[in-house]
Length: 307
Image (cartoon, rainbow, N blue to C red; front, side, top):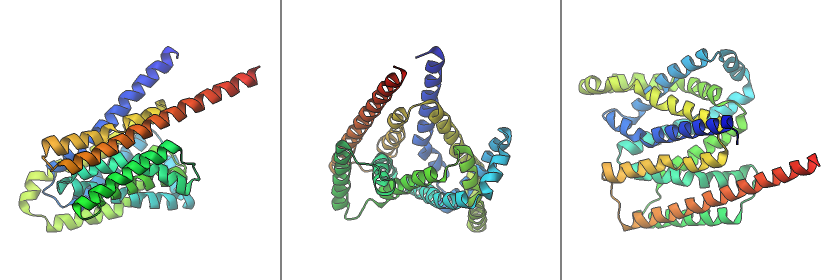
């Protein structure tokens, strides 16, 4: 590997770690504004995200690309669907944090890569490998055990995993760049954000307005900046590397839930997470093996062509 490629990879790792650490510690921010209803926090998150992403689009001189994207009916239909998934994911996560369910959120994002595998099988015709099936079976066993223990499905975990998985699938189908796609999605959400903020301002208490409003503009920063870091990481790193780094986020959520916020964590939770962690290790090892095998096959094919 050349010095230039090494530097590029190091920078990519730093961007990736920064993005997933930001997502991992984002519950701390939402706890700061928990006096506001989740709908109002979501509204502000949309409005300030629109403002920030429009500034980035203008600075990078991609306004014409954004206009072209928004003129494409097919692209906008896909983005409208992905936006629905994104907004649902945002709302449920905010609600989970402010309802002391960060542990469930953590579980959801541990499950998410396995949901992605299932969606790829169902909608993209991707073949499930043996070890992927084993990892999925372990995750299913974990969710089933937690369901029996709680007497209800861990709907927060499943909703977060499903909506984020479907969001990724829809964005992949839309064939639009990360910045332009995010800009279009936030613009689609703008009317919803305006309505939610207006309703929140109408109903909020004077005390909440005084003590928390100045935190709300930060919602745009904590939303858009990690997305930009993530986009920078994906341009520089292999997907296999991103696949390993992604577990920083739910791990941080888990540590916050158990050690900072003191959420209940009994024996059933321990067994559940042990099953999920085992599934994650199996999935990650299998993904790395498949990636290396594919790389060697490509190298062998290139050598044959050069002979």
